[in-house]
Length: 81
Image (cartoon, rainbow, N blue to C red; front, side, top):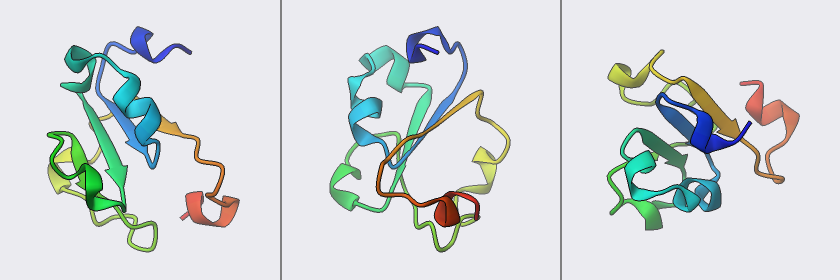
């Protein structure tokens, strides 16, 4: 599915290149969950550690219409947490 077709809120899990490929307008309803704090100046950045998968702002639980998980370095064991 093309990300531009998602009309809701999108979560990007450790996929900064995809997140930043969106238009500024589309990023207004998107969040980048990543461990690397070099993105923390972006409005949608949420620091995320796979070892603490529930440690995200509670107001974001259950709010995403699309979730993008595609980094090649993440193992099945990690994303099943």
